[in-house]
Structures are given as structure tokens and as C-alpha cells.
Length: 153
Image (cartoon, rainbow, N blue to C red; front, side, top):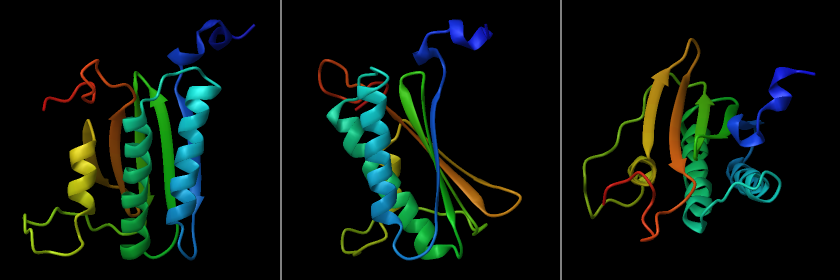
């Protein structure tokens, strides 16, 4: 018997790794994120709030959109659930790190990074030997008052 089989399922991370390439991968990535989160809840019995379900899809959509728009070639999407949160990681081929634009209520578009940062418990960008990786974490459950767990409002 292997040691890991004695551990409860929720003590081990639940993973999904996907590669997207070609025309318009954004909808496919968003659908894959929804399926993954639905499986986390239905198959693994881990509660996922409606807020977390929507936030994960929106963050995946924004990050994959940026990879598709600004980086030639494929992008990789990793989703990992552990410790009460889902970590979303998107790798692409462009080494340039994204920066949030200064606040401008008249600006149309280019709000994706602001949206991602406002929804996430943590956010990180780092260069890789090739390209970059953007990581964002979203807590899965809301507190009784309906606010995202772990975030101060």
C-alpha cells in the first residue's frame, strides 16, 4: 500500500493542466475552468461558492485573453485546488511583465489586470526561462456575511 492512499483526498492538491493554442482559446479555457470547479465540488466534495465559481471563470478568461493577445504561440493553464483556494496559473511565451494601467474612468478596455487583482486573494507575475507565468489565487468559500474569505473589505 502506498503512503498517499492513506491520506484524505482533500489533503492532496487537485490539479488540471491544459494547453491552448490557435484561434480564440478564451471560451475553451473558461469552459475548462468551469468543468474543473464543478468536479472539485461534485466529485471531491469540496464546497465552492457561487462567487468563487464566477471569479475563477472570469480570472481565467482575463489571463488567457492577455496571453492570446500579447504572446505568440501557446499558453498553458494550470488549476490547482488545495488549502481552501484555487490557484490559477497561466504561462505564455512573452517575457514582458504586465502592468496595470493608471485609473482612468474614460478608458475603454485594458482593465483585465485590475479586475484580476481585485478578485484574487493573491497575485504574482514572474519571468520564466522562456516567457512568463501569472499566478492568482481565489478562496473557494465565502464567510457567513457573504464576503470572500480571507479578504478585508
